[in-house]
Amino acid sequence: MPAAPDSRCDQRHVHQDHIVVGVIDRPFAVLGTPEHTVRWAEPEALDRLNLPEDTRVLAGELFEMIDRVAAVRPRPAVDEDLAAELLRRQEEDQAVRLVPAAERTPELMERWRAVDEANTAWLRELIAARGWPGEARVGRQAAGAAWLLAQHADRQPDFQQECLKLLSAAVTAGDADPQHGALLEDRVRIAQGQQQIFGTQLTQGPDGALVPYPIRDLDGVEALRAAWGFQPLETYIEQVAAGVGA
Image 1 (cartoon, rainbow, N blue to C red):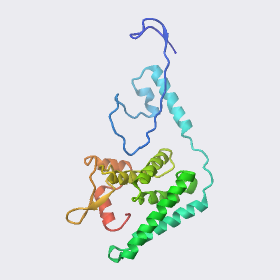
Image 2 (image 1 turned 90 degrees about the vertical axis):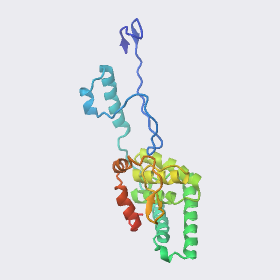
Image 3 (image 1 turned 60 degrees about the vertical axis):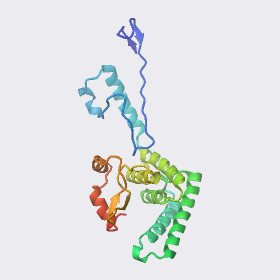
Image 4 (image 1 turned 120 degrees about the horizontal axis):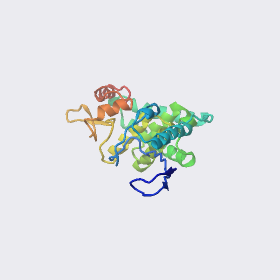
């Protein structure tokens, strides 16, 4: 747009403004400090903010652009066969895990290992051929089963990390449950010897009670859990210890 002389140019000139929208690839693990002070602004607040008029106009255009880009699109028909297979494998995964600890024989533990390895190998082939099975393709329940198989792919940490990247992208696109992404983020971090973010991964303390693995921001974890829809950490630990929602 044409501009009068100002502090940066002593003659008439042209301003060329750019609008940039960025999407982070790991929405669960935002790090760093912004170069400039930033905060959220709703479209209705633009008229009340102390902004240059051209910035106000550009911001209004940006909000309209976001709405157009993020508009709900028709979803393809669910792949019922793939969804059924994911749910079948989830059922098998849970069958070995829900056996009480006192009844876990060596034969059961070998079965557990075999189930996980078979599911991981199958999921790897599926992703290589067709990409991540999100909610649009297999429905919400079966998409949750895909996350569960990735969550239990601990014997192949490189593949599990690849799943995290794909699941993170699905969360950003609205094609996966954000809590599933948060759970897998913590799982991968603990496997890599890092501190977790949400406190979802537990271990036994010296007294045998369940405690979280080290948390990156212990003081802020409860607010973060609430923002992502998790119950308080103490309640979560109690439920896992009781075998509910583990």
